[in-house]
Image (cartoon, rainbow, N blue to C red; front, side, top):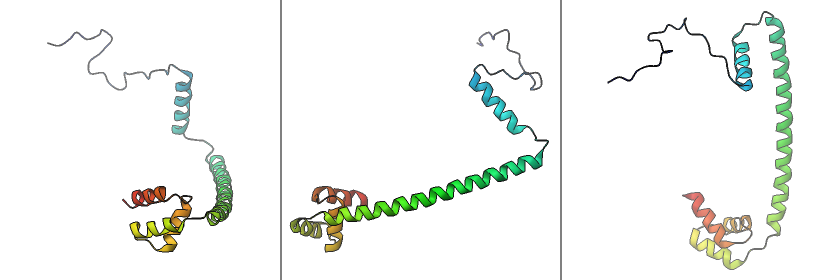
Length: 132
């Protein structure tokens, strides 16, 4: 059997009859205002187009500066990382172990060991998990 419906519920209500609910919180009202401003047409299209163009230029400049800084930081980091790897001494027995077990060349085995600070177990685990 059907349950009784609340008295404020109307069956077959038209969309036009419904009044939009007023947002309860301040954040909801701000979000609703922002959304309605997106839907509203600007009377001053030229000013909005100019503002958008300026915003795009500023964004482009900021992104290009970030890209330059990012490249500079990477280049600095590569130099330091290469210096640290050169200073790490690896045991020849570990190199031969990796050559035999992983079937790598001597240079690749040495590079792998230097990347993991001479720890043969960590280097082999990382190589095996990366290739799976």
